Length: 151
Image 1 (cartoon, rainbow, N blue to C red):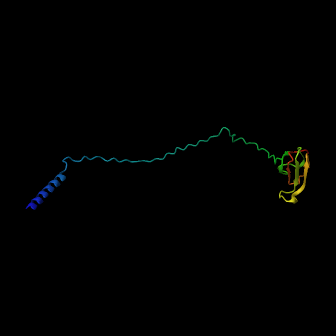
Image 2: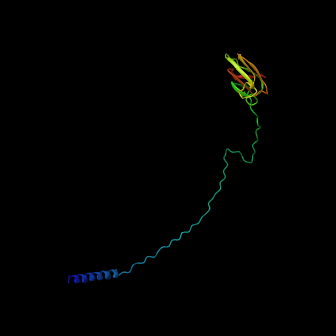
Image 3: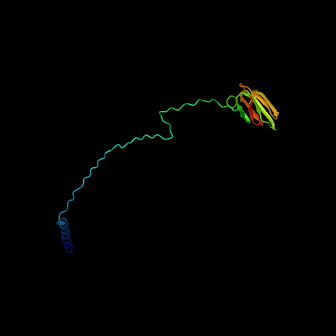
């Protein structure tokens, strides 16, 4: 009998609970209007062109005068080492500054380092005078001081 009572009590409780849940609040739910947002994208061209001319630049309407090409520089005096005739030195007669050492110089027909390149050479003590021809490829000297063009 106890079981029957338990079933009836449980059924009654469930029925009450169900009716309460269905009835809920007597007040109706408030309806809130929804907000619709529309996004519009518009592209606007704000490009600005600025032309600047630096102050240190010449006026573009004025043409600069072209400087003449001076050609290869050749020295009227030079020191020790190998000098290329026509680009480093010009042909002519040169005299060296007085030297207390033994001076060695050579006129060369080429720069291969072969003995066949040697046109003339000399070891001198003190001052020397050498004439370098336009056909010489190079002139080389060691311990001779500076060479000066005399003619």
